[in-house]
Image (cartoon, rainbow, N blue to C red; front, side, top):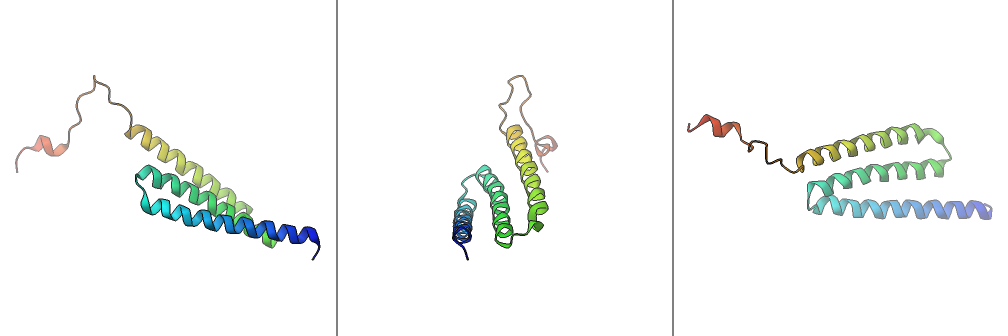
Length: 112
């Protein structure tokens, strides 16, 4: 094994160790929360870590087999993030004073 190959192997090993450490910290953030937005962002970061792990595996094996899988995961992660951001934006939008107050269907039915 030549010196550049050893350096390459060492850098890939460091990358895998960093991805594993980031994954452990990510699981702690998902577990602790405190809000749903924190958990949603953590799941988006989880998709990025899976992509990084697949990239490291692909580099170790010197095999481009995982590139299309990484592309699909990146697309799914992006669309998931956009969907969550739109949901949070609608939920946290300030209420217009001209709008009627929110009501539930149970309040209109009366006593049972």
